[in-house]
Length: 89
Image 1 (cartoon, rainbow, N blue to C red):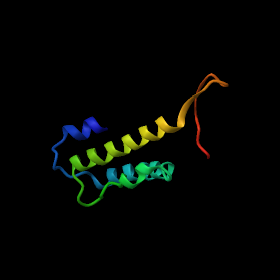
Image 2: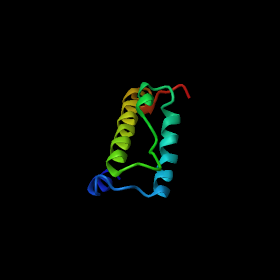
Image 3: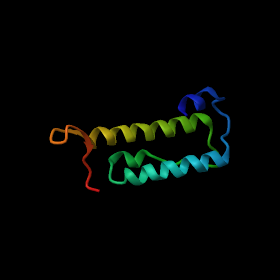
Image 4: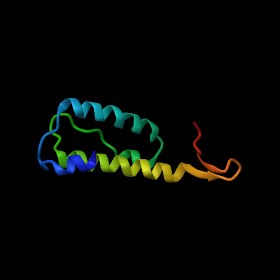
């Protein structure tokens, strides 16, 4: 997705329906990251004035937040012999 957006004209506008679809997914990510410090840097896509370069930046921030969350909570567990999630939920 990032590669496709970054190949388009940087100041080109995004389709409003696609922005709404992406925002539904990003909102679910924000719910998962609700207690993570990276949450304060994660904004949903603006349906009105968003450009391709804005979308790339915002989605990249979400990807970094998700990777940070995984690095923190997805650890190897010797008792089961594989990596598992270590969260309170």
